[in-house]
Length: 103
Image 1 (tube, rainbow, N blue to C red):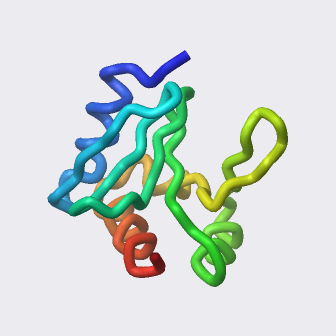
Image 2: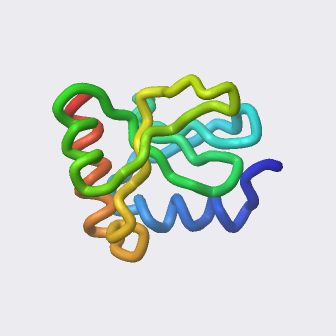
Image 3: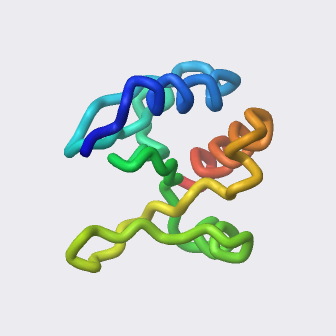
């Protein structure tokens, strides 16, 4: 399974306020960049994950975000975008800005 054109369009619409967003298809999903810096991924199932570690990862976990895990159970430093941000572009951009600041 790979991301659909509608998943890609949704992602770009959600984060349009950031400016400088580009993507690259990788392994059925997308790597998402702002001004050349990767800050998120879009999984093959259409789930948005923000790059996070340390205090920012703890903040995401505290609001119910879930860490990305590969099929073999290995985790990666990507956490789901909080559910409330999926329907609110301003909130989504705020979380993305926080992810970028924490890199």
